[in-house]
Every structure is written in structure tokens, then in C-alpha cells.
Length: 467
Figure (cartoon, rainbow, N blue to C red):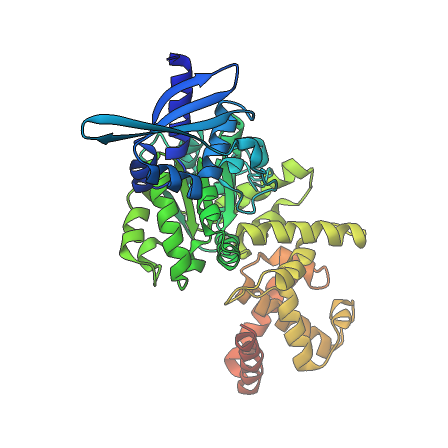
């Protein structure tokens, strides 16, 4: 008996064990005994304890056995069984020949639920990662320091830390998808041989439904059980999908038992995932649950600075501060606003300034209680007094226009908290002393003129309706 050939057979058993359930392995594969291997004829001979075991293996597992043997021993190997039964303390043996692995056609394809050992070939698996979302451009701040630090540790030692599974949750736009992609990218760079896969919860569900429809659920499960680092995004979408959850439960158990890394992302913590059974929620909680908060203003500023350096952009500091304060703590909104600024600047050959930023914010960032901009105020005041903005910006000293100009400056200072100099620039390019004088004039008039008070209240109510 060749020890090297026996070692190869043991490697086959390890591959099989990784791709079937524990009970299946104990029942059908653990009793198989290596007997010999002929290098000249390329024939592997194993012993099985009964004809029933032989028949069952040939009926249900010939494909798995063929692919395992082809991978370990070579594509031209043949498998023979010796059936060894015990009758009246005498061994009765029968030798039968299995179908050779060359009879099995290996399916090819990307990630469409391939059979077990097809999926185990690393170059056949597209990890579905976004190569642009890395740790290098994931800016660290107080709101993400813990998840980022843990994610980096996992990427360098997948499945070897206590952070398994790693469950990340946080609101939309806080950077969850970026972080879990960065973990996958770093892990793939460090361990190219590992099978890393990023998949959205929705795509996983579509694949599962498709496998049920085509009666290939076992192949679907086998594929996901072969992954070394499984990253699933937006799992809150499974809350009302019990069959998908049951299937993922079995995949999760297998991966966890085999020491594979599992990374999950959601917009809410496990306790708020309604409709999910406790047996799954307790497994989510057995590793590390980390909250990814919305970035604060300082982190938004840092993100914008990093994007400007990376893309070679030049955005004035006051514009960066304004975007950071009004983008509602969403990284997606920050990037969208910057991209829009650049597009408008190039198409209209204009400088990036506060007025352009205000217009972009108003159109691009959809949030409740959106902060008023000077443009918003000008629109409402001009509409109330039925005048055009260009008339307000003119040098005309007509009394009606002066009043519109002064009211706009007063309301801008009240609702935008901008400095007087900046308000003056945006309203007809006046200096800060003009703004201060206008605000004082309006305040004095409000103290004595009831009709004027009603006018200002009407304009302010239109702001509230807008929000």
C-alpha cells in the first residue's frame, strides 16, 4: 500500500467532507477504506461495507466522487469498489467497477450555482468586488474607527479572529458597502487562493429562487458552502423570505463550522430584523456586531479633501465646509454633489463657488428639513413681491427693489447663519456693511409696522411649506 496514494485519498475525503453535510459524510463516506492504487492502469480501489452503500454512492454521489478524484488523482483515474461483507465470520468480497470521471462533463460558467468542485477552482470564481472601494480611500473617523479596525484585522486573518461572523449595520450612505468591499479586496490581495465572494442579499435570493425553479438547489448550496470569505450586503431584504433564510441558515452553519469567514451588512441591528428566527439571529450575534454611524461634519470634510486630492479637484474651502454641513452625513450624497459640481463647472465654464454649490445641493440632496439656501430665500421673496431676481441684483435704488433686497438679506442672515460678507456677495455683490444696515432697517420696521410683520410672516410660512 502506498502511503502517498493513501494520503491522496485522505485529501479526497477532506474535499468531500467540506461539500456534504456531517450526517451524509458519516453515513456514506467515512466507511470507505482505501485499498490500493495502480499507477500503470490509473485505477483506485476502495472497500465499501455493503452493496447498498456502493449502489447509493453510484446513484447519488458519482458526480461528486468523479470531480474529487479528477482534481486529486487526475482526470484519467478510474474508481473500483471492493464490497466487503461479513457472513458467519468469513469475509465475502466482490469487486465492481465505477464509471470513470472522464464520463462526467464539467459545467463551465461564472457564479451561476456551479457544481461543488467546479466552484472550488479559484480562477473560475469572480469575487464580484468593486476594486475602487479599498481601505486606502475609506477615510477613518470617530464614526467608523471600530468597524474599520476590525475589518482590517479580518482581511489580514480571515476566519482566524473572534470576529466571525462580522455583522455591520448603519443607515444608508454611511459607507457599509465600501467597508465590506475593502475587506474583500484586501483579503483577495493577501490570499489570492482564497475563494472570496461579495453578493447582495437580493441577488442571493434571485439565485436561490432560480435554483428551486430548475431543481438545482443542492448545487446552489454546494457552491456557497465552498466559499472561504462570504460577504452578503443588505440582508434586511430577507426579513420576509423564510425559505431563503432557511437555506442561508444551512450555508451559514457549514461555513462557520469549517472556520470560513462570514461578513454581513444591514441597515439595522439583528434585534430589529423582524421575521428572522432566533436560531439565525443568535448566530449573527456570536461574533461581533459593529455600528457604522453617519459621518460627522469633520469626517465629511476629510472625505471631501481626500476626493479632491485623489481626483485633482480644486474646490474652495468654504464650499467644502458648506457641502459637509448640508449633505446629511451621507457619503453617497457627498460624492454626488462633488461630481455634479464638476459637471456644471465644465459644461458652463464657470467657477465652483457657493452659489453653484447651493443650487446643486438643492437638486441633489433629498432630505427632510433641508436647510434653506440664499437662492431659496430669493425665490420666495421675489415671488412674494412679484419682481425678478436680476432686478434685485441690479444697482437700481428704486424703493420697491431696495425693500426686496433688504428683506432677502435679513431672512438670509436669520435662516442660513452665513456671515454678512458672504450674503452680500450672493445678493447683488454688496459688501457686508450693506447687509448689516439692511438687517437693522428691517428689524426696526418690524417693531412698529404690523402690516409689514404679516408680510414677513407670510414669506417665512412659505419656507416651512417648502420643508
